[in-house]
Image (cartoon, rainbow, N blue to C red):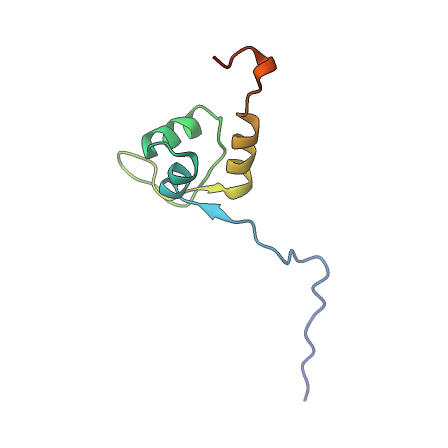
Length: 83
């Protein structure tokens, strides 16, 4: 008897990449505390995989969100904010 594999047309072939707080900190060149603050302020979205007593543990940030945060933080000389 032969079993057929069901069609997987609607299944995403590429899983989104998630980074932990240390990896995000390395990418942004900031401390882990800053990453947690960015998440708490809502400036960086995150998913919680578990809980901790002092700090939320198991936070994962989509890699695309980190890339978007970096893209949005770029300033140009015409912004007048660059000194």
